[in-house]
Image (cartoon, rainbow, N blue to C red; front, side):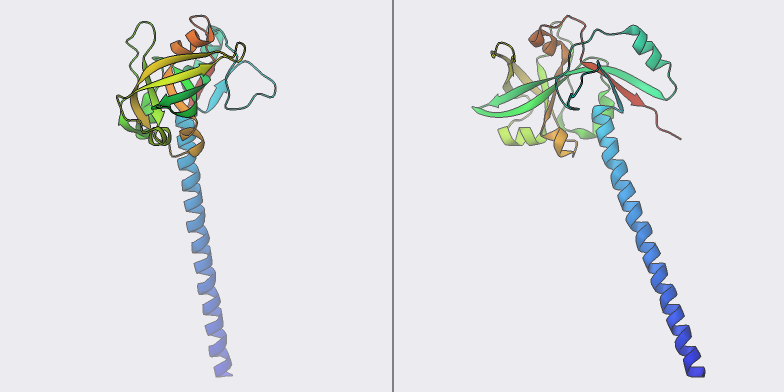
Length: 224
């Protein structure tokens, strides 16, 4: 009987230890997963905003060119007066082809203006600096991603050609822009797809009015 009780205690202690180790492993796994999800979501929101306010287009892809919209002060005031909203900034995007030394790469140029909060993307900048909007016409600068820069052997201060294709006339417009900076978000979809430039350049290419935009990016305050 004594030997049986000793063996039972051993089995119970072993089972308790195994259960404790399993629970600890599950807690660590959940912590790693939650931390990874938080890091990824922070990167996505820093680059793309928490909410997009745009004219409704049926079957429109999340990442695609926009139909031009007039800035709406009423919408902006409603957004700014809504609790939890921290910042609002206009944007527009347009498909383009970056070319250097006869090597090309397709990108989606994201046009921004002086209200763009580059501080949110501070950790993404790996070389150079952000755009300068001092030119009265439009900034002749561009920010490219590190994968695109590596693919085309682009360095800061290099001059590149960027081609815009008109879907209606099938003609191409080309602009020579200086590479002001290089960024890397760590999210492959963004790093392989996007470049950042002046929204005024996109307005000229698209023949938009001087104040038309693609939409608003809305950033929310951190919940407490």
